[in-house]
Image (cartoon, rainbow, N blue to C red; front, side):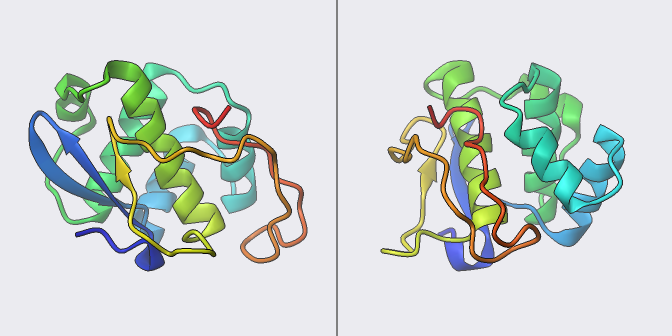
Length: 144
């Protein structure tokens, strides 16, 4: 079971349960893949709301590898989720929110992603902690 306090998210892909987490190594992998210099630039890149299918594969792949799964981005690109691309975008949204904003302050409950996405607050909110303290964050893709 995924633990949001540890940045973990659960997903069902190809009918199999997976845990994803963006560890420091996974974030460094994404910095390199997206050609950015730091976490703030990575958060800005993700906050733009413009992610390609390749971006989704890279983020999901990094999250799976961060959780210890031995998968390539090409293998991730072949995976399916109930709910299709919208569910995969929701999975990425949840993973990024847990990574950059932390667990739900009210419940801290685990999130069931990819087909069973929690309702997200569509309004941007102040983030009192994290790499961009006090920065008014923009919603991640799939949260509108």
